[in-house]
Picture 1 (cartoon, rainbow, N blue to C red):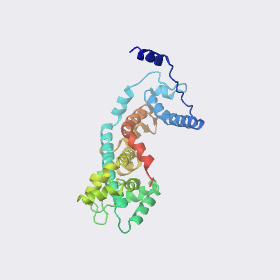
Picture 2: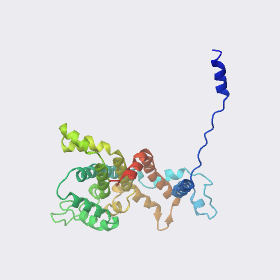
Picture 3: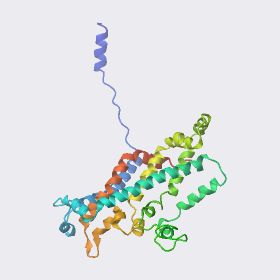
Picture 4: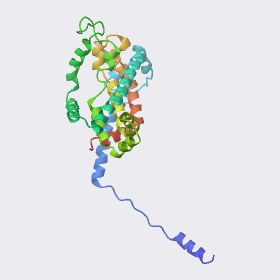
Length: 307
């Protein structure tokens, strides 16, 4: 004991070597600085939107108004909700966005799996057609889709040749069916399914599983980043869609929240405090969804197209 105690005391008195952190390379510092500036530029419009929604109309019109409100008018949100049936608009937007999300995830994942894992005649041609569809601008498809909806046979009073009625106009069919499946979702799922090892499906076939059960139980659970990415992008696109619901609906019972925001902009002027309050409420669901699924969302974009 006498010999061990001095050694322990000597070890305790011996100073430990100080580990110095290496300074960040100049390139890494420049990258962080650039990303910080870009992030700030992206956040500033949202901050301005929220702060403007809490100002009075007089303060917004004033030339000497600062960034922060002088009087925080939280009642603008209640006034915006009373100005139009936003509960109905939000319900319609949610139904459309949820329906598009489910249909796009299910149908596009099936198509992507078939193009990636099932060999059949013409699969490459079909895949190239999906790639070509990605090149078509969205607004060039509005008129053909509108004519298809308008002259849908045996719908809305139309006869067999699509004449005599209104077709699918001002109905849920017009809001949900067009655009329910996107070429980008099919392409993304195909790339993820291609990256999965062949041994998974070979082992499943040896166990007696059919093709659909291999797709649903073995392969699809392995592509969670693709599922989350497609779901978030589809929900965001449908929730923020303005032009198509405006063209195919006529009654308030089928209006969506983005169309409802237009009530604050009239010929006499724009009620900016109410418009910003309504826009903040319309943006909030997407921010929450992104925060929930951001890990898979970023991973989905980072790994897509590697094969």
